[in-house]
Image 1 (cartoon, rainbow, N blue to C red):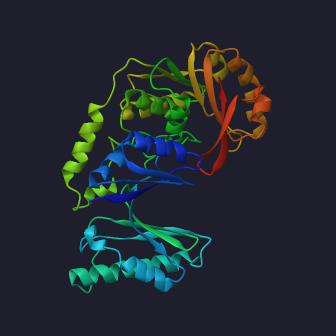
Image 2: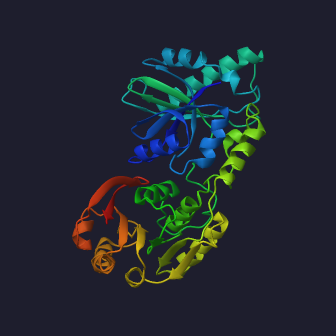
Image 3: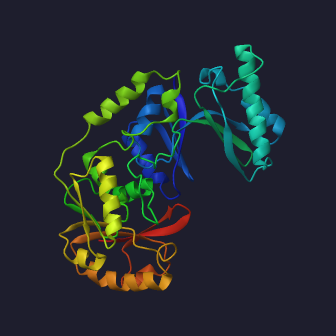
Length: 369
């Protein structure tokens, strides 16, 4: 049976995510602000969750309709075939958001949607009470300009949670954003890839996973794994397929940080990700490290002066780091910063810039090559 999906993304990554989904051979891929739609089959629930580096989660679309009133919302939700996925004991909590719509009360929308699903399931299973003691089916709704999109979340924990980063520094970079930076740099394993502000090691680890063509979701579980409607072989087949497409090294991927505690965390995270034999970490300040690097790709996320350092300290760091980095013309540099005057303190205007978001912090990816 053909299915429709929605993959939310961090703002600024929609185009990259759409490209990724096309590379994974999904159909009818189309990007909107903050999300990408695509078509597939039940086996693609597993393939998308296991293989996507950039999506925040994979939502199965149950229905879409106009909902200018609570009655319209109730009837629209009740008309959907919930019994196709949710068994009589399934738990179905509801969450979501509403923007620029007549229905702006989130608690009221949650209550209406919950009641509509319960009425449908109770009627189908011919029971008066739904125990909700079985697998979880997280219902997620989005109402924008009175158009309601009703989905089931197949992922559970966000897909940026790969399972390897149990420890992190004070200002971690989200894994999906790190993977996007690797993609934007076009690094695929040829030449070196380096991060001189590695923190908890996210950028070098994502670079290694990309170089290996290793699916980021191989070592974690997903909510839909517990759904009886999806055969277990769907998941095992998707993992076997992903493993069969992996590459082998060797690769030159390195991370540096001035803080020994960060190096310890990075090494532990790399070991959990299975790339500790590929990524090397060393305690060294960024200016010294960058001047010793061979040609290749430099990916880094220096402190912004918002969470880790005072702004003046960050600016002084940029002043020192800029000349050191620019002394290495053979390095293609991709530097993420939220500082509006980064180029001024770095000492050179970027050749290209791209607006991205690190969590809720608006940033620019400054590209020098």
